[in-house]
Length: 147
Length: 108
Image (tube, rainbow over all chains, first blue to last red):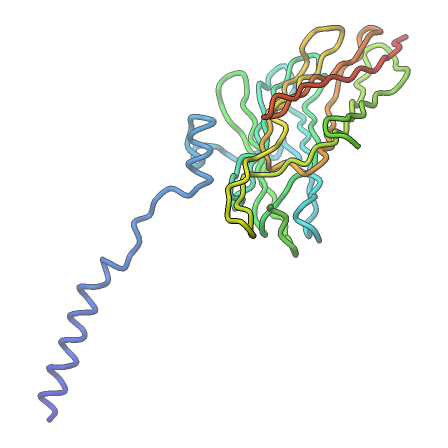
């Protein structure tokens, strides 16, 4: 009896062992990473977070249909080329992009966006020297606003 | 209000070199592509795609956007007021609609 039990258990254990690698998901790029790669041409992991960008958004938004966000930066506008706004978990993570010229005077953009669920909002700046910097803020959404 | 109606607001007067805020609200449904829940048919997206901000006919900023911007989009940008002139926004949607609005500013 003990021997049979042992054999059965070991069989289960071996099966489990062989199954483990198959269960592990192939770690593919998320939608956000694909979108960033497509629009910016760089990987998200290559963009570093800086404190020079101020991304203002509510911590808790009661409606995801209308989330006010403001992006400001102390980086001089003549060093900045473009701004992108992404929401991680939206069906389409890309929200908008804005190009700046020295006539803007400063880096400033404010709008209202839709958010499907609680997620990070990202503001990514492309500088004239070709580097990318980013600011991230999490917004909790109590009622989704997509559709 | 009809689709495409816009309000463009800038201060009437500014000092030379001052950074002013240009605010706008545009009436537009901004719907993403979706399936109609009753008929199951695909409803195409209807949203603004592009907005250009001009100052005295010089391009200042271009905003490209998708359906992720809220309905009746509000937007604010800044502008360095170096001379008196006309602030103009030109915006278009993915169904061929194109509109523009202007506002004047006096710089002293």
